[in-house]
Image 1 (cartoon, helix red, strand yellow):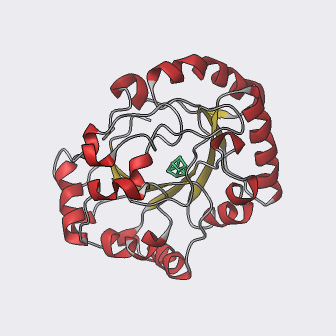
Image 2: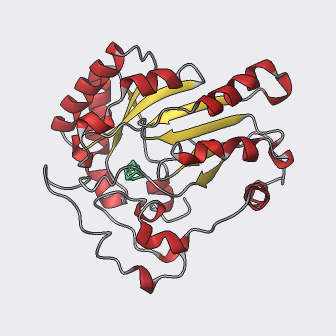
Image 3: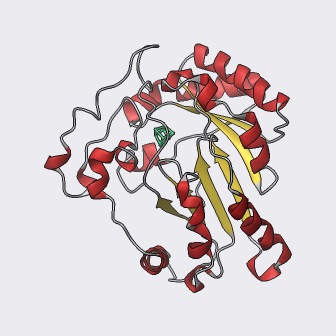
Length: 262
Ligand code: SF4
């Protein structure tokens, strides 16, 4: 938290996470009730307090709000965001949607772009269900053989618990996450609302450990908007202390009220 970072948000997700903020077994209709025709700019879309808070990054009804850019345009846009118009200490965070869907085949083109020289730290914010392709794995391994391009890579794995509304068998993929650890640093991060979620997280951690995952575990309070987030952040911090896990805050919520673009 607090590291200057540029976020690259890719379109599309294999999940919907319509259960967030809802009673068990219920799904949110909040985003479904938003009329996409009323909006011409991503940043004017309403925030939601239930379901996936980045619904416009994967719901096809909102696809017209996401620009389609070639590699030059993306690299220009990223570097233009940097305070010195060149990479210094900034990180690149590639998020979504789910950034390890078909986009894997595009990343080498972007990350080898001359404007990305100097970038040293990259994080993929993933739901931990997508295997790395053979081509992308070869590409990442090549960095280790070439000091010029040596880069730190992190897989921030937000595995989805049943409170998301997604099926356990689809969402908890120990063999996928175990493999991420061979190509960078990986950690697990669970969004928690209730004690029931904590029990689910414990079960998930057991499965990930049994599958060979060795990285740290974070828990984070549910809450895309401040009202929901402040309801349970202390309780989740206390759960983390009880379990010996790490607590992850949502710095953007108190700072920016989770506005689009933050
Ligand atoms: S995995 Fe992430 S982006 Fe995809 S629906 Fe769930 S919360 Fe949203």
